[in-house]
Amino acid sequence: MSTVKQNFKIEIYRLFIQIFWDRLAVLPLGYTISFIFKYILKYKIKNLEEIRAEYKKLSNTADPILICPNHLTMIDSNIIIWALAPMLWYQFNFKKLSWNVPAVENFKNTLTRRFVTYLGKCIPVDRNGSKEHHDMVLQKTIYLMNKGEVFTYFPEGGRSRTARIDMENIRYGVGKLVAEIPKTRVICIYMRGEGQKTYTEIPQKGEKFTIKLKMIYPKTEYTGLRAHRDISTQIIQTLKNMEDDYFKEFPDVG
Amino acid sequence: MNEKEIFDKVVKILEPYVRNQDALKSIKNETNIVTDLQVNSSRLVDIILAMEDEFDIEIADEEADSVESVGAAVSLIKSKQ
Image (cartoon, rainbow over all chains, first blue to last red; front, side, top):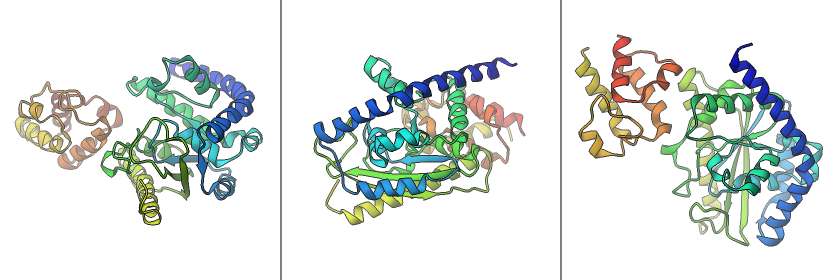
């Protein structure tokens, strides 16, 4: 067996060990984070029941699912997980609790964050890492998505410095991923707090969020890099359209 | 097409993406596209595709990864002509 295949096999074993611990941690970690959001940070999601009903419906499929949200704060993924379903539902629908691929520099120096990230279904990525590292992260993602695990990827790559979807600064990694996995359903999520005027570490205390979901099935006639660009553009354009609709509905916020 | 012509066309392709205009003025084969010209690395795909269109060539993903400097781009394009 080649070294690459051997390394991949080892990484998959490690992932299954991580999944074992993550399953045990769903309720204690999930309820702790939910408690912090709801009672300490006093976050509120305006259309919570509607979103949860929609996610249950959209995720009820055997097709691979990729969640693609806009990106404004460091805890967008956690808020989205909290919003999309109750923790108890995730306990019984564990594959629908989304994986995330956070940048390793955001947590590697803090033991608590590393611990929570390991237990929180994360595959860290080093943005300055080698091609082999990036390929391994991609292969792990593809492997898990083909097993029915939901993933979240931010098409913008990082938090938007303009606090709006920037069509000039999109990344094509999400397109590369979708191109590799046929029949991927992409759930575009636009989330914004009323007081979110720029990108921040975390949303302000007492923030009220509006969250919108839209499912798309990106298709392309291109191949290779053009396919990655075309698919990524379809996803980010959908988010841009959702953002435009948001500001038509709430012209006085943000 | 000679090397100078290829070089000039490559520079023209890179221009809209360059954030370090000083480095652009003194651009040469050794100039690194990301670190010297401060091109956003997420735009490298657009640059590769623009080169494919401009020179009517195909650049494989592995070849695209090797394009780190202006000279590397010029050499790659020349090898496909």
